[in-house]
Length: 619
Image (cartoon, helix red, strand yellow):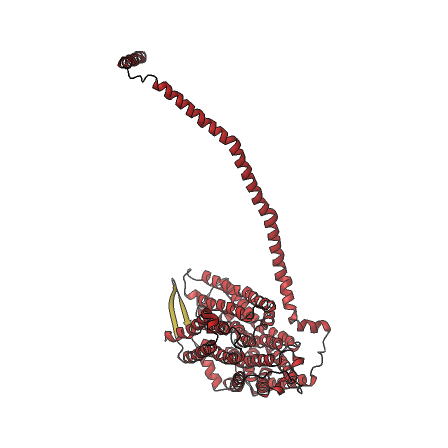
């Protein structure tokens, strides 16, 4: 059984590394290899989801490397591999032969493999390994077209923002070690054992996990990095921002629900942060004039519902939302990428009639957008009500905030549909979308419809049993009707409003269009002080440390010169005097050595005489 789990993570990781090492020589074979690996990984993930295997290997003394595919991680593994396969199918048809396809597909497989490590990790060290590789490969994928400085700058912003939040996981790991029996305690670093820590370590662990999760999932106040990440290729956005990287934080919060509850404050902070993100980033999405920016802001808002579910203890609803969102959002990003390739734009005013011009793509896009809007009978409508039932049980105000976020979801989804379905304009220079890029969109559209089934009994009860989430609140019929009615009302209002400007003050509209000014606030509060501190440190280095080093060197040189001029002369004179004295003594000592016997006898008599006198005097 353990071989199954090792194969699940090793197959995409190994194939990705191999494609990256071989490089451009593998460009022609890269799509086929990647698709075969992704299909195999999907089969392994489905098997693991049913069998729930675990694997362990020696790592550190008392701390093995352990992976497990339980209910939640098994569902996530299937979701990740399925979306990866569909995105790679689209990419194989969309990416031209002139691109560095081995590098692209290698990075995509490496990223998917690291995400699989993240969702199957049973301990914090293994989670950190997958987390770090996922962050590094996401940076490389966002900056895939590295010759464009704007794209590399966007990749740097996304990477540095998430890396700053990732420090929380290191804080959590350190606090977990401090709370355990010793530095090699396995149980203290187990994800399932984090909730058993004592205070104050429990609060430190909770804070670290929450910060890292909110940063990775682009929740407030970290949301702005997702706007920059839209500079990457559309397949990258479809994979990273639907079922993998940005939902990794939500998955971590769902996985560590007992920790949030045990802390006494983590669940409330997480729930209200998710609700605030769903509302504020929903307003940001409404204010966007760029389709990918609208989808990016909507990703933050929709993941806000998953975070809300984690805080409210609605594990089943949060998981259903995660899976349904993966299908809908990957479809929306891929359709946006297809239109960008065909029409050369992603600005909403320039996409007028895009759905009419490419009917199949437009229809698939519509299914996903209506699902995102929460309209029945599509998947996100029902999934959202399942998680909002948990919010209602916790607090009516939290439920009201969730409904407000759902209302805004329908508004920005209808806005996107209004632009792409307006009467078509002549597009003589439009390119044809390859048929191979259309079929993945159709598959995802069917998934948006089919995934409504798990939100209703008896399948929903089975999902709860698989997730080991007993006692989950079930939505009433009036909750389904209320959310559907609000979504219909919001969508109809947005459609009737059309492209007219929002009835807001100019400053408010600019703030929402600029993602609440979060990036500028980060620069003011973090980047600018850090740069000022760095400049002060550089000035201190130049003016104090550098001068001190130069002064020390100069003093050393002067001392060496004085030593050469004074001390060396004195030493040389002393040595010369000793040598001269020794030579003089040698000459005096040689004088008695004449070789004549009578002189030696006289010297002996004189010596004995002196010795006799000394003995007489002493006595």
